Length: 377
Image (cartoon, rainbow, N blue to C red; front, side, top):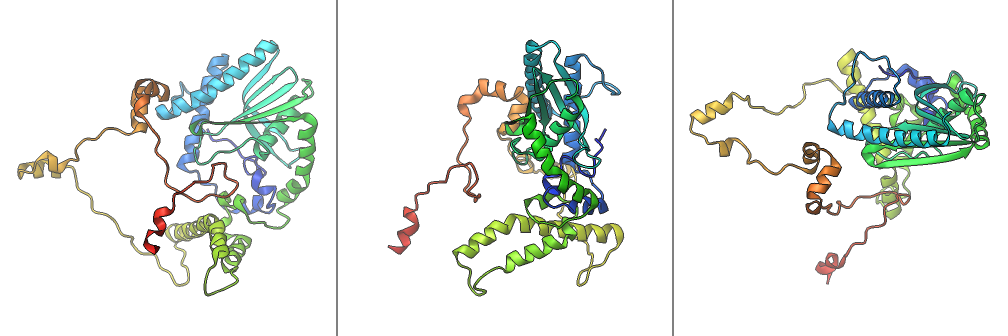
């Protein structure tokens, strides 16, 4: 079952803390679930099922919950194993350790009507730990200075602080499909001091007040395709060149800076316009809805027809090739088993060069440019 979401959701805090009107602007647009989001929901349900099974607690489920595939099983079990390790460590310290799976928490004292669900909560020996599973594999998300997990931790602290003498708050984000586990640790005072800084923007966000601010946080905003501030900033960014005739190095760098955001925004606007036209008959100045191009397909019945004409299978079928790493890993029983069997035959070649910001953790690529000048010598 999908989780309920607050207007001031913890998952959207990275956006509404910066662009306060966005929380109410998003309400105008349906939160359409993607296949990735649905996959994440199923992964969380499977993790909850496994952890409750380990703890001997029951959940409201019609029957056993199964993973979609071996990849989900392997990834979720990595998260579950980490949680179990932390549970056992806490219980070794004190038999009174508190362990809660999928704990509903409320942080409305700091953000109006704010609530959410902490995937795993462990309290022992003055330490509150909140663990968050992120099943996606788009990009790494750090727990350090992360407002989402801080709000979960804040709600958990509010819920249990009167029972337990909590001194330290530990927040961990697990992304098993990216082999990423990050942790941030704060004293209770540090977390509460941060929470005070949330109150004012949260109040503005709940009221739909404040100024729109564009930035990377716009990428997943449901209102980005009609946000005037974002449109104006994108247009201004594209027009911000000193020489309108020729682009210098600084201008090229500027284009690269805004490329990803501009591309994402343009695609969002186009997708919105197409959906409005298809679903609601909306017309746009200068455009019309037409039938798109398609590719030809061959029915499988053609196989026997071709064979009857004397065409051999070597023509009809592509010669079988060795399976790829991902497919083999699934068939061999997981990454560890595959490594044990054929690890010496697996290598990772250099990736194709790409551009990244200076803040990227990867070292700069050292290229031999000698051959580049051969034609000029």
